[in-house]
Amino acid sequence: MIPPDIRHALNQHACRGGKTARRRQVKRVEQFVRWCGCPPHQIGKKHVHRYFEEMSFSTTTARDHWYAIRLLWDLLGRSGLPPS
Image 1 (cartoon, rainbow, N blue to C red):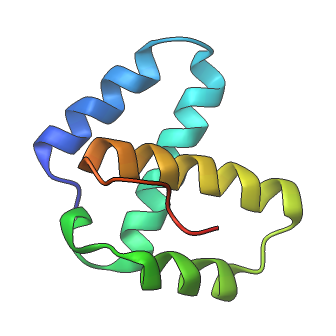
Image 2: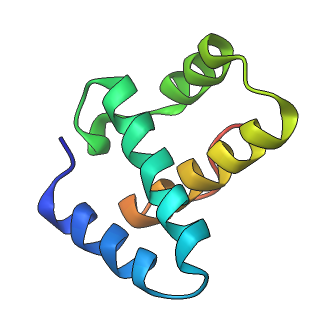
Image 3: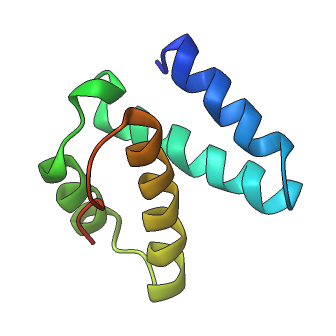
């Protein structure tokens, strides 16, 4: 489950810019958090590596999911970029 503060930030993100692309990005964040099975604040680099290993995305799909995870990283206030 995504905490209310992160949910609110994701909803705000989806309301700005290209709405279809942003909605997809929010859905990818939700998919990643569900896959992790832990609160977003506990997600780390190992989760990201395992996610990409297990999902075996094509190159462009992996890129889109990485951008979504990067959005989550920013919302969580993490420094740097998530692993790719």
